[in-house]
Amino acid sequence: MSAFKRVSRPRVATRSTTPSRRTPDAVAVEQVNTAFLETLLGYNARRAALSIIDKFVREMALYDLKPVDFSVMSIIHHNPGVTSRQLCASLDILPPNLVKIIQSLEAREWIMRQPHPHDGRAVGLHPTPQGIALMEEAEARASALEKTAASKLTSSQQEQLISLLRKVYL
Image 1 (cartoon, one colour):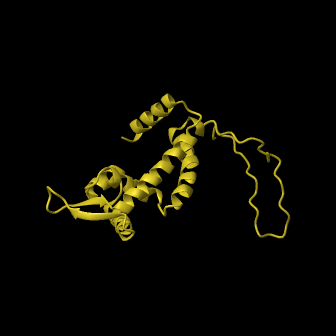
Image 2 (cartoon, rainbow, N blue to C red):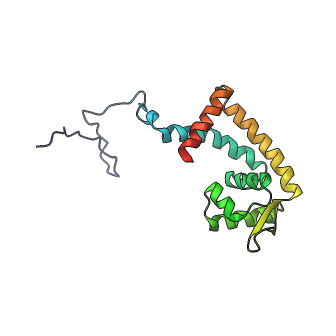
Image 3 (cartoon, helix red, strand yellow):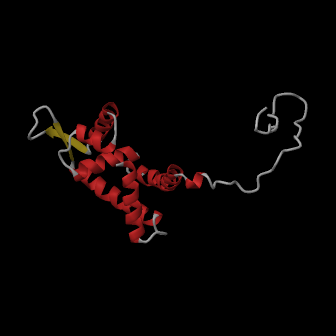
């Protein structure tokens, strides 16, 4: 005999013509209990990220930048001459996916390829003047958005949160 009590479940509505019936143990939930989920790092990180990413996507749409485009452009902007291999490693992007992103950014004339000074097989990625101007404006907007999103935290708390999150993924 099982130690677990069998719980009857509410019936699922079907296409039957008979009206749905309530089971005697049907309960209305007035307030959802998320206590367990709130103990999970992933749940809290995801909720925080979602609240920021939604606004970030809207803001970057003004520049025709998706979040991954923004990240790639930011790396190139701050690291002129970076290689595709370095980009993949730093952003955890698969090479086939990065190829499409690079082609798109290059077609928009935001980046250009130049021979790598030390490795004849590699190509360095550099921002164009249009790419530099774009990223200066987009990064300023992203910084303002982050400042607003983190306004409930002190600057010390913000630094600590970033430090702790980096420990999780690095």
